[in-house]
Length: 202
Image (cartoon, rainbow, N blue to C red; front, side):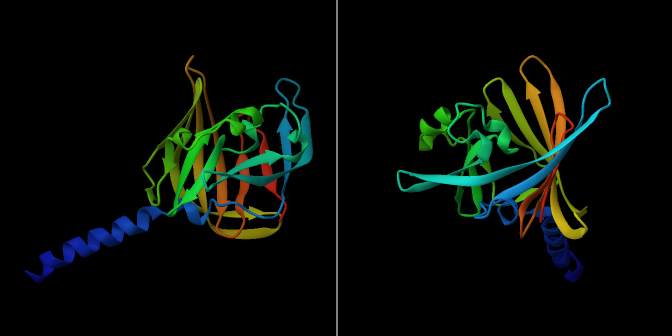
């Protein structure tokens, strides 16, 4: 009888070892995030590179803090800014979950309402879970959650949260990228669906 009683405990341990808490890796940072990037142009094989700065901004909506990420070069413009962060969304951090409302431009952000936060990254996820975010004709799928070590700028970052990012368009086009998040720094590496590689300067 005792051996049967131990089975649920064992299953609980196995479940816990496969579960992740995304809010431990995904959070608003106070400091500016500096990324270096490199990209091989299609056809020519020419390698381009550069640096850019992004940061979290926030505003209050019905006494709720709304966060979004913006490239400093986009400030004051009407440019599409959804590509400044891999989630393409404004964020509400609540009870260890993350509520998401997709946007494309600054004007979209100004018009957001609490009811627009229809998508959620839950408190706990498992390696086989998939999170879907719909942004107009584009859907973003987050999947393949796992822990991975990452060598970055001569630093060895242990147990990063690695996530596959799939962009799927209504016309059928599919593109896949990948991100790495760290408990101390947040987003540290992003391979965009275009193949552009971006790494955080730490």
